Image (cartoon, rainbow, N blue to C red; front, side):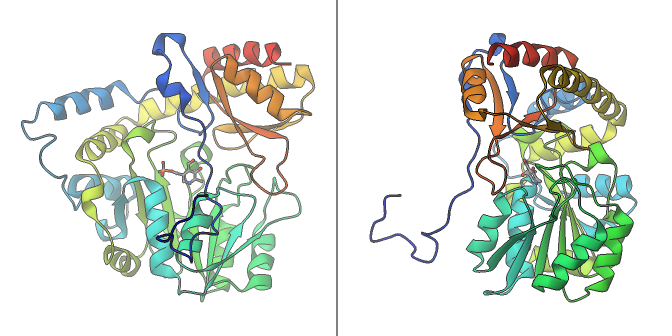
Amino acid sequence: MNKNAFSVCRLDTIQPYKPSNQVAWFLPPETKPLKLDWNESPLPPSPSVMNAVRKFLDHPNALNWYPDANSQDLRAKLSEHWKVPEECVQTYCGSDSALHAAVRIFTKSGGAVLMVSPTYDNFRIYALEAQCSVILDGPKDIYSLSGAELSALVEKHKPQLVYLSNPNNPTGWLVPAKEIEEVVRRFPETMFIVDEAYAEFSNVTVIPLAVLVPNLVAFRTFSKAYGLAGLRIGYIIGSPGNIDYLNLIRNGKNVSMIGQVAAIAALNDQDYLKEILIRVRKGEQILESGLTRLGFPFRASPANFVLVKFPDAKKVQDSLVAQNAFVRSMSHLPGMEGYLRITLGDEEQMTRFMVALEKSL
Ligand code: PLP
């Protein structure tokens, strides 16, 4: 890192989150790159979303006006979808920015943040920025986490705030909502941030509890199953009191109007969501039977990715890149050396991926 006199000294020791390589954007679309590295949906959103976006662009002020900073229609739609009061819902420019806000609101400087690990690394940066101490600890078996193990971790570290990705990116554990509830109720002084970015795939949610208790907030996104990563729409569901606190620092202008319109159309097309979930599971079968045939150990997840261990992961990844197939190395996370995470696509995409993988060996 190049330091200069203006470097903010309290942040300059942070190890930044490593984004994945975005080369796919610069390849001609007709080369059909396999972008399986960032758990986006490799499939476009519903045609009704595309129509709603096109129609929105016909509004004479579509781009020159700021968006509706209250996300009025989207919040009303989410409230109807989840059967929770509107004051329990707030929108953000992606769930990343919702998580960022939550750390700033729910921690005190110097507080301890437990990230149940190995997990999605972005949260670590937000916690460090908020001057918290970050504890990375998790279950012995990184692929499964029970409520009892979660409880033991909270007991051991006594954090001010717990970050739990459920299902977990990248190891796929899934704690049943009932078990999370027991832990949340057992530690009323600890704030639980449950990141449900992949919950459309797993169908497990703490949303009904989050609206009732003060020490749990649920985080959701349109970036994964709904296929809207590029529009940056996420939301929080929590008690009205917690949403009021979050609103103290929220900048509603960051939630684009195109994103709001697209998210409403996506929620209105639940049949398309179901179709995507089926297509992804079919793609998963192709990938997993191919990996079994080749003899590579892998872990399936209740989300849209599979973790695979390779004897020489770097060589495999480089060769895949040369074939315009992008997967995510997990080597930046402690204990995950040699693992590649492959985002699931549909049958056609996974068939092409297996051809590329075999060539890379
Ligand atoms: N949370 C988890 C666990 C993720 O894996 C990701 C993206 O990979 C995000 C949040 C980011 O979601 P968004 O696009 O809504 O910011």
